Length: 178
Image 1: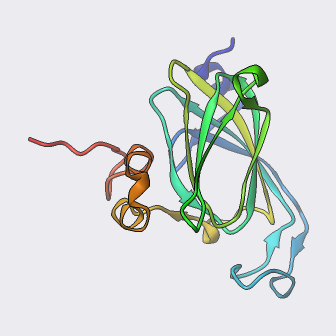
Image 2 (image 1 turned 60 degrees about the horizontal axis):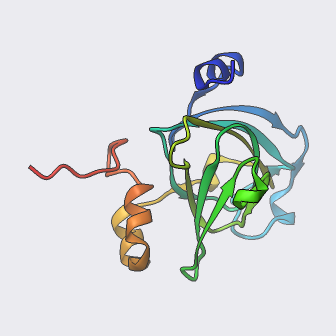
């Protein structure tokens, strides 16, 4: 029962635009008015939102950024690596998982405005995690990375950017050289 297809079916997960599968599990009925939010938000937002998120060994969560902090929680499967690039260009990798002795943590925070993406660690079949966002997630705050622009801005992180970004108009990460 501890398989990706089991969780995809039992949790009714759907394909996510950045890769993998998800299901929204919570969206606050109350909102924070735009006038009470920082200027980077273009309207009112829910107090908070939460999702299940699953990546199989062949999936990535493509590099993207949002305007809110995002807290990641580990649930099942194997370790998930979360790659974060700060606005100043610092790269951090956090291993979300159940083995603290291997440097894994049960929760991790991605600060607002960081580019981030994730992938199951080497040898992992799948990772099931949760993501909690406050103020709540809204696709108006979502920006998918443009590979070429991100490499130009952070050339030292080209390998991570190539691994965790899609070629324009595709869900392919690798260029074909024929």
